[in-house]
Amino acid sequence: PAAPVPAAAHPPPSVSALSAASPRRVKPIELVDLEGNVLREFGSGSEAARALQLTPNEVSDAVLGKTATARGLLLRFKYPADRSPVPVRRTSSAPTFAGAPTTGDPEPVPNGAGAGERPPPP
Image 1: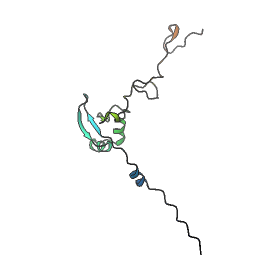
Image 2 (image 1 turned 90 degrees about the vertical axis):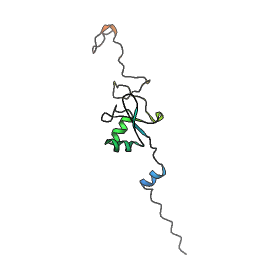
Image 3 (image 1 turned 30 degrees about the vertical axis):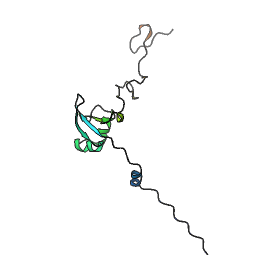
Image 4 (image 1 turned 60 degrees about the horizontal axis):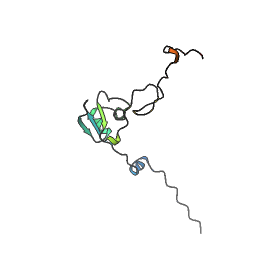
């Protein structure tokens, strides 16, 4: 008799099947005023984007601290554990955060040399 034909390899799972297997965590977003009072609450970033007529990237950048606001609106994650450290004004292209050591601080200039001048040779 003929040998059984092996079953074809299973096709790779679809993107939607992968998404269903590992659901994304939804993080509620709050719209706040300058004093931190909650003006409105949203179940997710996409819900906030739709309701406030923003792009999802604008919402994401605002809640992650990449921008201070999203078109003038102050947004934050509802739960403090989801929030990023507060970014500090950058002095270089590398991001720095409150409490983190910085590498962009200038060293003191010896012998009273002015800004932008090299100190005299020893």
